[in-house]
Length: 466
Ligand code: 5AD
Ligand code: SF4
Image (cartoon, rainbow, N blue to C red):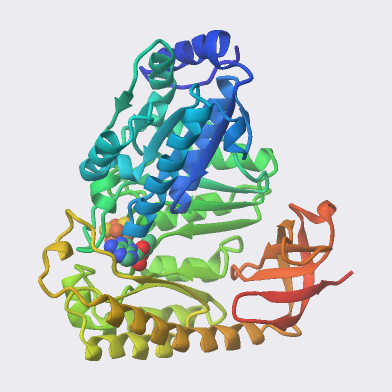
């Protein structure tokens, strides 16, 4: 079997388990991975898929054909967890007609004691459990399960730089995710992530650059650097490496066309990074800078460590130096103690910033976080009403921003065939605008000049120009 090139103590162990599984248990067995949550999880699933392929699995979307279903879970909001419980319940029924089917549950929910214990208590059909920091243990746990263990489980609190030596069976060949750091130390008071993904750990810059070079050699045109707070990249390394320095190094990689990153924390956005957008030809014209709320009082309660004015000053500077940059944000309504006045500050902020895109959320109480203990929880009906009012302000601005692209010629990296319009393909501009235009499979993975002819709130419509 091919060497997996894992350079750690666990190396031989992983290879040994994979070999045994492939030879005795899993060759030509069928698996499905269901991924919930963020890009970090999507990329973790690509690593799991890589391990599965090494173990001899083939893939199907139809659970009835599967010998193994893996649920890669998300804890960020209550609704995300409920979806997973529903799925495990459905798989329990499937087990009645297909007793040999195995269920693995991994990801953020399994890092949380409450959710893991709930799964253990309610669902005896779960066979394998691992977390976000020990994907590398999956083959061992699966092997033990095949050897008769009813439940194989292992959780690691913090990231140990073993999973980043694993390969990834990537969904696309021309755009790839690359982890640059793991975990989060910010402890925003509403957020479960610091408890699920553990402490912040930066990855070695040499390894990151080698991974990007390798990807480019294999056809990748666009990379997205992933981390909960990429701006604090380097803090855990004993060197003068910073996120911006890393960007400059990656920009030098020949053959790479586009660099994206997510997510940024406003408190850590440096001047060097703001200028990097102007300087670096490959860095896309798009910044995701979650504000969460517009009221300084709420921001303080959220432990965001910036005021409304400081955020707006940063935005002004970013726009002044990069007038064409597209801005995106995450906003939450109904944080405990949010008054009508506080909410109006959010509406005021979004009107001033004029975001191109936004991810909007209704606050969801997460047990274990500081905000969960607040006695000032906002009633559900008020949260929903504010949510609708927020969209009513955000969407017309987004529509105007998109309409401003009409008659412009943009470069579109084509991602896929359109599912909503037959005969069209879809892709993204540097500003992360979704563009649909007439075309076929032969365009996928290519960067095409497209003239924008129409626009709505969520996408642009174009025509290829010769
Ligand atoms: N409730 C609602 N939204 C949340 N987010 C994080 N935690 C919560 C929560 N408890 C949102 C934030 C974050 C995004 C990834 O999810 O806006 O930026
Ligand atoms: Fe959660 Fe805040 Fe960390 Fe983002 S920065 S992952 S919102 S704690």
